[in-house]
Length: 318
Image 1 (tube, one colour):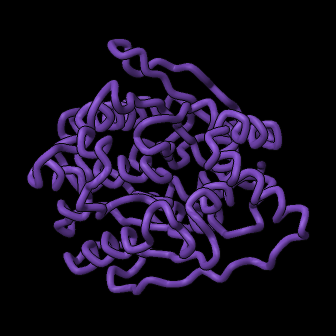
Image 2: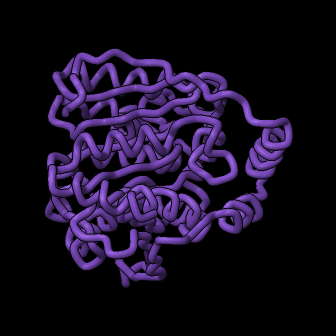
């Protein structure tokens, strides 16, 4: 059933800590990511992923003009299951879809068709460029969902960090999806992991170049600025120990949506930081926080009934 729009933010209990070896692994993985060894980190997560029961279709070009491609992960024999377009993070500057195979497979085993697209980044493009890429990826998923066992009427957008910002703008500022013949109301939901949604003023020269030099330009980069109560349902997950994206971002967006009469739930995970929230979806670190469970429950609650049934059936065979 729909989540009440007046539901207050809640704290998600942290799961019991695993043995020290796992805690050390988590620390090492986070350190490698923050130290710039992203390719090494994600190669390790991909190696630990379990692809049984999942069909992967990679390197599908969705924008020939800019040479952009996407990867799809889906359950075997998927028919009419919800579709999730997942945007990865990287400060709008870095990242590759291939690094996130582990995330696609984890979500696919929960009964979902998962689309992971690339998008252009700064300094090649500024905000308009990567937002247009994101919108085109969602439009492609809407048109082609049925080709891969997905339900185009159960279409969700999800992202981590900068990827959550892309998804949030698609869900709030209708100009982006309108350019590709869609509107935010056609999304069944938005799921944001540690996303920046209300981050003015800008002081970093890179971000000023990326989002604009004057206040009016910069306002256009803030999802919270566009909330009017017509947004799709939102699930905003946030670690309380996030020192990269302040937890107030999730609270600000959730409050704005609810005050406008919309539907948003903010879940705060104590003791979890910016990167650890994402890594909680990985097979080695899944016990740290119930991210996969919360995402799955949200999608099941907001997908159309046939898609919910198909999702449950697909998940049973994972």
